[in-house]
Length: 215
Length: 248
Image (cartoon, rainbow over all chains, first blue to last red; front, side, top):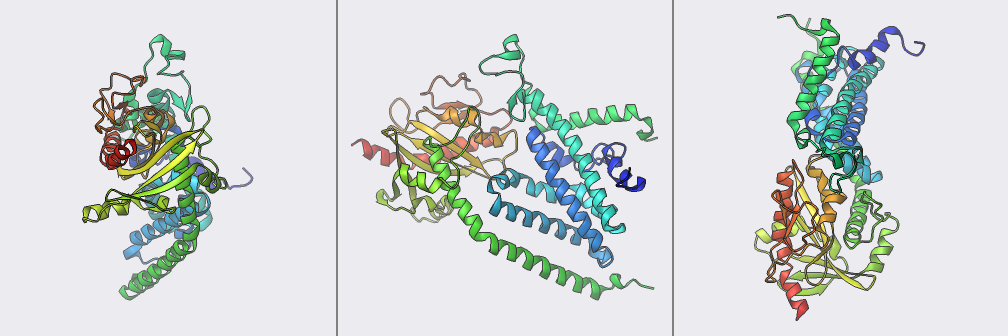
């Protein structure tokens, strides 16, 4: 890889697979439950978290030598909250439609444990460039799982993808519905997000047995 | 040796400086962007009201407003009168669409008579009466603009929400839900106000029966649906005397 050194590239590829924040570290589960009933919401959330985590990581990394260790968690919280609110205000002023779609996620981004987790575990000990890559990598790993879960929940729960009717119209009884297919409404409820995440964890660990913890 | 950043004095000074910087940054952002945000909200209200009376750019399945640059002009063209009803008295006020329903609801609790805005629109020879309503969903506020004819039969509705769950409660602003209300009667067979129930036990999923005072609920969004029923019942009922007078 020309652009990134091997060590830097690992910062991006690791969280996508063997050190995934959701399936391995089990962080950020709360938002994975809340917003994955639709694929579109999952994608929007993934991109928002990517922006906040990448910028936040850089800010924290630049401040890492002057942050007093006693109040570092509060400092991290203030940085992420300020970032999110400013972005929200700017969107409200210049991209009102988009901001309305995002408003639901603002609170969820601030409380996302992956963000605090990466600030604490990585940005406080590493330089800005590496922190930036770490932010991109971890949010991509998070987003990947979100999009997989959103894909299955919307497809099986509503029979649509990004609002497009994949299986036909359930009310008009066209397409698959003409043959007696029914949407599984249970997929839309949050417990199913956990079960889908569980299945992903299962698949991932059975393919890579080194991930299985010893008792 | 103790690290410089571990000292209490350093910690306190750092905290104060940080709060000052972040605070002024946020205050600056909020105040410099406020005019833009207010303007966006004003245009959105016009778009919402126009949407309810059928002035929109809907395609087959998605809900689309008229564009923001056209909204003020179309608002002038289609909205013939803006009325405010207070204590049974009806007055005209061309700023009525800016009335804050939330504030009016709080005032009503404190005993101040609520100002009820109502917009009279005309399109293709038909007269619409559009009323804004507001209530509570699962997480936060939900609101709507409901267009009715003089018999309180719904002609169009626009629902919106602040923070309902995407894919579940947030679907109240989807066409399949909003369009269900079109043609529904708010009055029952004996012409008294009954409202419209967002019903889970609705035996009419295709919504062919427009006089059953029911529309089909969204699976997984029970509380948001109940909120919709409740705000229709409480807020639209306030307009009943106006419509009774209209028939006389």
